[in-house]
Length: 120
Image 1 (cartoon, helix red, strand yellow):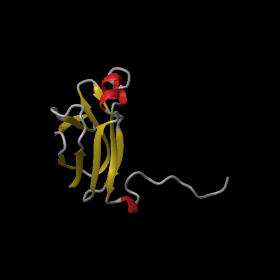
Image 2 (spheres, helix red, strand yellow):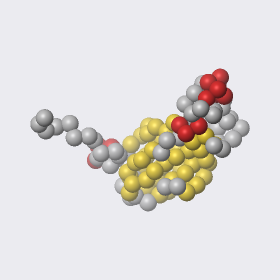
Image 3 (cartoon, one colour):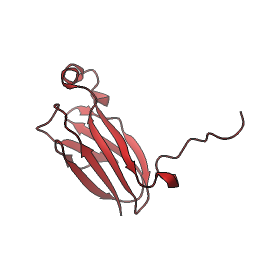
Image 4 (cartoon, helix red, strand yellow):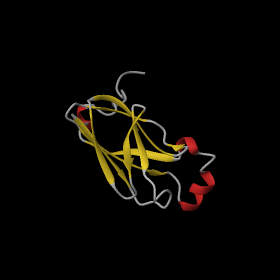
């Protein structure tokens, strides 16, 4: 089985609550403030999303091999003051997800590299 590791850093917004983790539309768990969680998943294409109440991230699509390991970081996109001002205006992309370790990247597993060669 493949494994994803999701890290949540130190940010003031929601520090007493967990970020809910959704994989392919199903809730798989949560990540508390300044902690990380790992999840075993099947290989293939997946959509990752984090959520707290009505505030969510944009879906993050990735592909992983059956024995792959990928690490992600997630958190609020805004600083303390802007978070409270943006909570209703940017609730659809309030949190960020970024890949910080792509063990299979060199083998073209996540995401496929754009075709930069060829003629115009």
